[in-house]
Image (tube, rainbow, N blue to C red):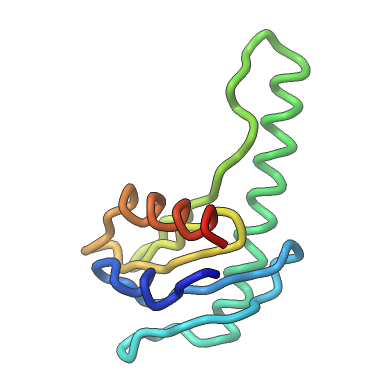
Length: 117
């Protein structure tokens, strides 16, 4: 089971969410001071799934048409914005403030949550 509250313990966490394979928001938690809302998270979840799908297509195509290997599978997606970043792996995501972001810690926790879920 995914523990969204645990993801919210990351420094600067603004939101944590889960999504289905189509990118539809399934559940979420927002920080009290977050400017995000459910609609924004739903759009963000769709963007994460879409970008993972595109990156997967590119990685598989590159490996199939070259001698280069190791690009597939795609393990996640990170979008770095002006004030916050969204980090996703599997069907889980977290939004963190850029001024406090620890991308490695976020990815590690997302991977642990995905493996546990």
